[in-house]
Image (tube, rainbow over all chains, first blue to last red; front, side, top):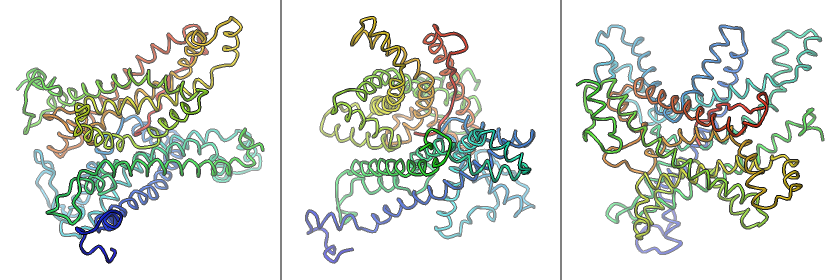
Length: 287
Length: 267
């Protein structure tokens, strides 16, 4: 990156470090932070939308409400990261299976042959001949979808509770003004529920931040992948910047990154809470 | 091969007793149930040991957070912040590399093995989460009870031991039950972080993933794993419910706090 980096073997101290930290691979490492932030930025609204849909379903009339409640219960009841490992393969196979049915209707062989899952080559998603970038985007999409489904169920639970918490008097007033149930929901319940939902949602956001390293398990080249990759011992034969086992320092950096991120989120969410409680008839709002 | 034979061969596979080779072809449902169940030994080991040791440490940290000495208070606050503010996954990785360094320097070499090193991380982690629960409970011990104790002439240790601590535990218990369940779920992360498995002696998720990779069919091993964990969660709620009943045995029936299972996924 800098001009003096041409021959790293003669560099010392700070100059060596500045060259080392600006190699191509390190830029991939810095980019992967952006991957994580993008995942958070895309997942949070998607999960919120899933949650909103789930909560609305759960409030609906009898057969519809079961659907919402089953979604909330199923995801929250199934314990843990197993869900992350399970869902990505299940989703991948589901998509390929559906495409297989559409693209190759003449295919007669069974899809599950013993230990193999075989679909016709046209149904492979993405196609084997596709560029690497499509594989990456597809993997990222699967990850976002998995996170959104899992966290959507938790958000649905929070939003469901928040909708119930809107004071009864407000709803009755709306009815007295002759609003239809739809109008009442969109004009009264939804604007007022956020203040009740925020503590739960901010807790969920903290959990979501701390769940991002699991991207690594989903096979995405995220910060954990690069920290392991770059930190490992490098021999002089293979690289211009030989060093010992530095994974400790890379992971220490990740730890500090997450701590700082959590701290900043806490401060921002406190401000949002202060803004939302303004003028509300709660303990926090009567100022 | 009959199912009894499979259970004899693989029932204790996770701790190195029985058949060395894992099944490679023709996986039966019985094999999957047995091996995943045998991996559960490790999950139970990690969770129980971490809970028992972490309980005492958490009490100490909660008291430290309420201490008058500023340096002790700051120390405990930082401890809780670091372990609650960062992902457990990263903590495992970081700890493993620290232990590796220590081993190279000849200090505590056994810590690079999962059963000790990961246990240390889990103890510290659960201690931080529980300390926050216990600290919150300590803050909400009713003033009247403490004043009544003082009126009886109790001071210092006697007041804490006989009045404050029992109430604190009573208040903290429902939240602490959830913490115990999360800890069980968190134990599945051990072999997915830096800690290596030795002779394929892994935990339940390790074997579930083994089967999922080999058969390319996630729809059998993961539901089995989920089933085992639901059973464990129910068992934990049952056990902690008994303790909860004992803690609240002096209260009128209607006032007793109920345990509510509020699952959280990842820490």
